[in-house]
Image (cartoon, rainbow over all chains, first blue to last red; front, side, top):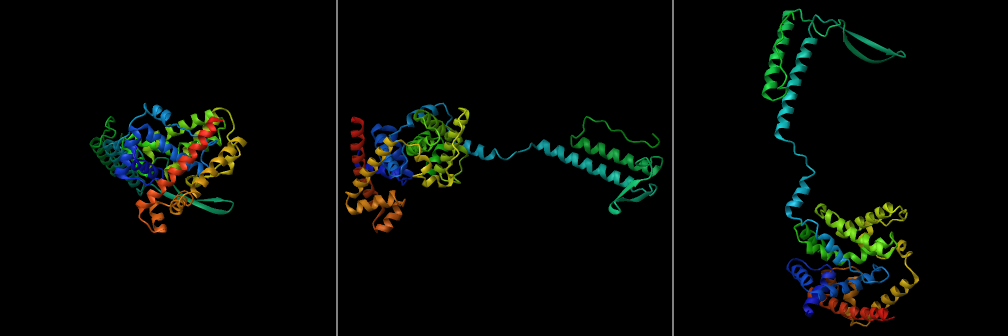
Length: 188
Length: 191
């Protein structure tokens, strides 16, 4: 071991090596036991100065740790990328297709219900709820027991159109493909 | 440099982790001894902490200093060890934020024995004496490095000399200190 090598080790203890010099130091440490001992002595003296030693004994865990790590995987840049990407959940394309179909079907359903409810034959009366003489909220309910009246041709038509549309969209998006929806016929 | 070593480990260089072990093993064992007083058990826990660190290193992004991160792993490993052994972890704690500059925590000193204190004082005095015996420039360089924590570049500015000269002076100081420490350690072994 030359003076240049030991000077390299001294700089290594101070964390002042980078790039090629660090490569060289690592190579020296791997190939030369005396170099390892020298590095540990320098490091030990520095640790003593800072009160970082236990009973001022020289400890060497490196061999046992290295042995234990023999069975551990060797990482690669891909491992790092995998870890970084692990936090992002990527959903399959099929999920988004189904979700879009479901959303579309729900929207059409909501539109149909709103359309039916707002028919003029349904007399809706506002009811004021009173609690302790203080108005709290106003709600609206239908006065009839049925949600909609199917006896009228116009309502039956709208329902029929809705069901046919629903069936078409559902088929296109794989949503409810197992469900068989038939058109509604007035009077049934 | 630690960050570069970590990146090398993350890229598949296991030997770079070996260097991190060599660098921090004394400190980690010292910290763990504050929790796990049995010397043999403390070494086992320290080894476990390093293995845990290796397993977790792909997740290390460098948001904190490597030693701060390693220090937290060591403390948690020690506490888990005591819990598993049905022993109560000490209530005292050391702030992880101070881990990088963590030298003389009084909480940990209370576990030292009178004999170890004598040995510690003897070694410390020998090192200080070795530094005082150095030529002035060499002594100043090692003092600025070890006691003030300055980088080589900062020391070169303070001492108004090239970085290569700083490196060379610090190396010579370490050689002198090493010779003195070896002398003391050999005397201790003979007794």
